[in-house]
Image (cartoon, rainbow, N blue to C red):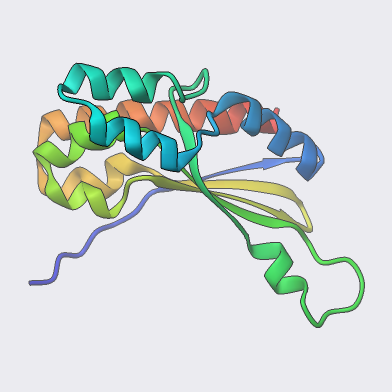
Length: 163
């Protein structure tokens, strides 16, 4: 079975330096030791205990970093001179992921979400594919509400970082 999904991409362009934008994002999301978090989640006997373990490691945005991929470093190999910076962050919250995937199992393919931060000629672009657009075809209003809340968290973070 094949399902066609139309994706809404939010892109915010900033004149701020890349590093300054990244500092704002880094301050707003948690940076847990993922091995320790996994152990805590595995040891949790109840949903409440799991939720508590996650709550301890998220940042003020209720999000945390799962992975950081430095695309710019790879692109720079073999080039001379300045190469624009490009970074892909995988961010999210296991509790939010659970809420969505309980209702729409395919949501697990989209969580954690990607934030792309890359330098271009017109400034630093912060891009994000809206979770609500990814889940819309599944026609589950409850999952869509969770996705919209997640979108708001991410979009608020990107807008703040860019301004």
